[in-house]
Image (cartoon, rainbow, N blue to C red; front, side):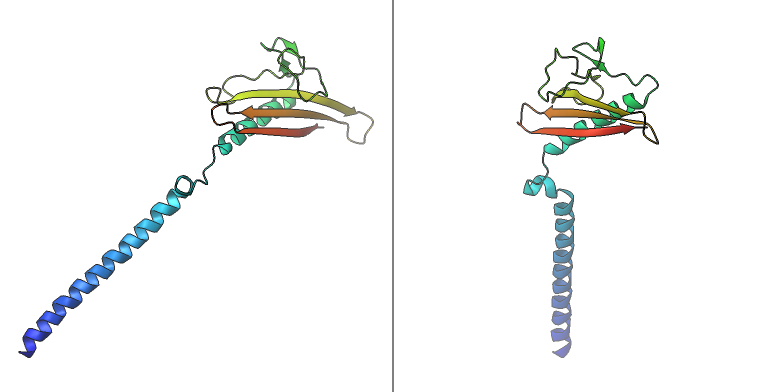
Length: 157
């Protein structure tokens, strides 16, 4: 009689252990899934991130062009003229300060982009001669309405 009772109890302990192990594994897998997909599950993953990344890549393109041997940014609709600083922040595509950007610099299938050359300041009499260049970049996603406005100053020595 005692052996039957012990055998039934061992079976119940085994089932309880297996159920607790299954519960623990499912809890760990669930937490892992939530942590990997947290942005999309909770709505934190904003499309704004892509607009910001495109603005950064445009800023890197502009900085690289300024640091090149010619230091000349191409402006106008087709990049047919050298950029001239224009302190008006709402420059349009016909102005000489509208920077022509190659299509591989940003995601042109989802975004509209404007980049303007705002100002140029040079101090050749400084101990280390330098020039400052000011830019304005706007990346807009017309589908979502999200946009990034980025103003930055680049110093060249």
